Image (cartoon, rainbow, N blue to C red; front, side, top):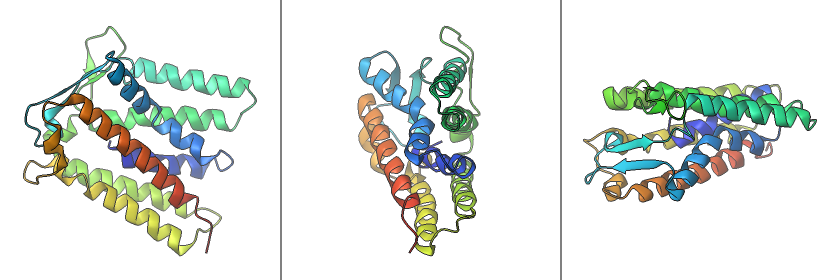
Length: 224
């Protein structure tokens, strides 16, 4: 899934683990992507971008067995869970572990088959939804984002109307901004990414930071 919905997933986890600081949860849901960005810049993993980019189908996550394989994601979640538990962070441990695993599950639901079983294995997984039915993917992601907000704002401590409106507006607007990258019929800024893989990585990194900050800012707003 795109960055906004990964960030909004943090609200689902926060709803269950109320005592865990939201920043820790938000970092966990995007930890795999942060690793992907770093490894792309380091040349360890590789993204391939077609000379002309009309949609997400022209951006290929060609090699990312360390940041986005099933085995490494599970291992990363287990290590963080165990480390936090041993450090006396009993409530934070499952929240962070589930946050890491949520990224894997959501990517499997939408990505092309580019998520390896483990480093060194050629078999890879992914529904291919972005390429087979991109507008269906857009509807699913928007509905999922709204659902995350709905679960979060219907907690025991009823949030302010301003906070509810802000989160719902973000969930809808952030997904609508992905129309051009999902549809070849709608031109957008992705056209500037043609043949520039690190530019695509940088754009993703910027989206991660901005969406995490916006979700934190909107969800942390005090009641009116």
